[in-house]
Image 1 (cartoon, rainbow, N blue to C red):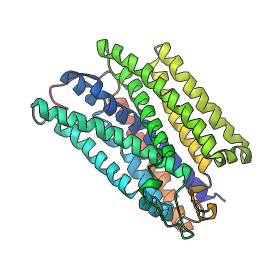
Image 2 (tube, helix red, strand yellow; image 1 turned 45 degrees about the vertical axis):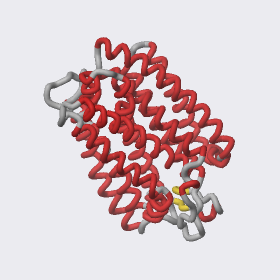
Image 3 (cartoon, one colour; image 1 turned 135 degrees about the horizontal axis):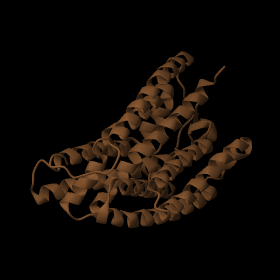
Image 4 (cartoon, rainbow, N blue to C red; image 1 turned 135 degrees about the vertical axis):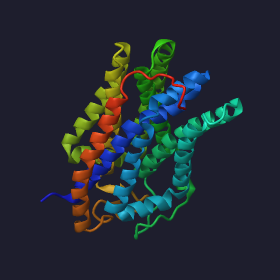
Length: 339
C-alpha cells in the first residue's frame, strides 16, 4: 500500500519547487527591471515574461489548494500565524498584475514610473514574504496542544525568517538575471551579464550565512540525514548545482546556467522538506504540539480521490506549460502593442 500522507507531502514539495522555478525568474525580472533606465528597455524586460507570468502563478494557487484539501489543520494554523503577511502577499500579487497591465494605459512619465516602482516593490515583497514563511516554518510557531496558533507578528518577523526572506530575494534575482540573459541581446544582454555575476555573488554570501545560522539555531534540522542516509544525495546535488552556476556563466552557457539555477531551487526545496519531515508546522512551545502529515491530514478517502485527480491533472498542466514556453521561445522584441 502507498502511504498517501508521504505522497502528498512530496507532491506539495513538487508544486512548491515548480512555483519557485517558474515564477521565481519572472519575480526576479520584476526586481531587476528598475536597473534599466529607458522606457523601451523596461518594456522589453516586461515583454520577456508577458506571455508566461500569469500561468506561472497557477502553481502557487494549486499549492494552496492542495495544502487546504490534504492537510486542512496545517492550512488553518498557517493562515492564523501568517494572516497579515499573507494579506500583504495577496495585495502584492494583485498589484503586480495590475502594474503590468496598467503601465502602458497612459503615456505620462509619472504614471509609468509609479507602476514600474509598484511592479518592482510587489515582486520583491512576494519573494521576501514567501521566504519569511519558509523560515518561520523551519524555526517553528507557537502552537498549543490543539494545533492553534497562540502568538503574534513578532513570532513571524524574527531574524532567522528575515534572513531566509533575503535568501529568497537573492535567489530569485539570480534566477531572473539568467533568464533575461537568454531572452535579450546586444548592449542590454552585455549589461545583464554583469547582473548575473553580482546576483550570484549576493546569493552565495546569503546562502552560506543562512546555512551557518540554520545549523546553529535549528540543529534538529539535520536529524533526517542520519535517519535516511539517501537524503545526502539532495545536499550533494544542491552544492553541485550552485557550483555549476558560475561555471556556466563563465562559459557563456546561459541555458545550462538556467538549468543549474532551477536545480538549486529544486534541491533547496528538497532540503527544506527533509529538514521538516514528518512535520508540516513545528511547535516552538512543545514538539508534541507540532502538526505532522499524520495528525493534520484529511481522511484517507479524500487523499485517495485527490491523488487520482492529481494524476490526471498534473500531466495537463505540464503539457500546457511546455507548449507555452515552446511557442514563446527565443529572443524577445519590443512591440508597439504591449506593456
